[in-house]
Image (cartoon, rainbow, N blue to C red):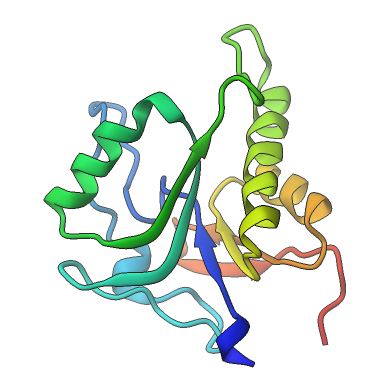
Length: 160
């Protein structure tokens, strides 16, 4: 069964920490040091090792690709894929409220999750986690609590 597993995660608060004083923050120690929570979930390799097998699905817009790829390269992080939000399909406007922004971001991520066949996805935003779980009910969607360093299964579909 493990041959068919595909893991995905959001970039922010999972691979990188978010800091108010930085445009592109330093590598997060959250998942890198403590694994992903439940014992059935494999830990992410420590810094300077290979992250092959993981797909990053971010709500950052496609026009951020160069700076993100540069950052990943600087930190020797090699992923299977980096999937970003297509602003022409999933446009987030400054006038959108937090609920609308979360819903649009979740729809973008859900489209990538479906297209890639991701079986397990880790999201640090609880509202987006709820939206994603409803949009891709056969994917195990986890809310990653970066403060407590634990993952909680939020999937809508019951998994046996």
